[in-house]
Image (cartoon, rainbow, N blue to C red):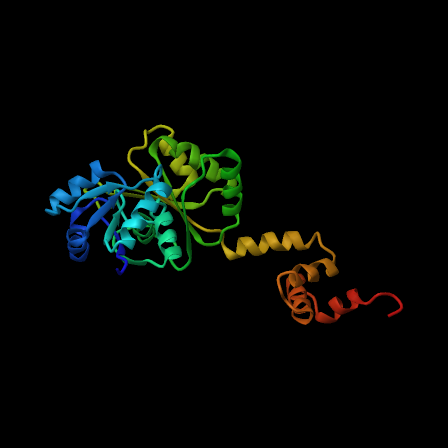
Length: 283
């Protein structure tokens, strides 16, 4: 018997008009729908007159239930996976099921559609050429601090999710770790009261310290500029000797000749001066 296929079906993040005809057809034709919250998803299925049986697949049963779904796929059943809103497997337990399907050689295909992170990015007014997605920051204090430290040097545009009751705390942590950056606070995306606040971290903090945040937020944050990173690197290089500076580049895989050129450029001196600093007395 041929194994079935796992279909990752993106669902609207707010506006039901964003549901694709292909997703509706797939959900109708699947043998079973695995949903993050069946109570929430039944509203979507009823709206589109979909009567396929549902089963729950969520954060707290993602490994055990994935084994059961894999078994059903091996028996030739086709399964459609949906999350509460958006694209399955993005900041979602579907990631585990997709990984296990890959390990078992079971076909997986994605029906593209809404994703809050990409929607917010395109509305942010910040650079979209290079970006990174963090989802929700870790709740564990040490891990959270490590992630914030990593983000402090990030030059790409950053995207994170946050709940309203944690927004002020997270904005404060971002300001402390990253400094005052341009951000876009996006909420109620694709809905009637969609709001995009293009502001700065400090101004957002000021606003929400006197106003209760409402709704789930997607926060899009400006990355550190190349000029900032270069100035920071120069400050670091000023603490290095020339041999240490060359070693810094060599550890990144740069050959000695190219490393010398880079060091000379960083320090604003000629290559002869760099070469002279490397010659030991008596050489």
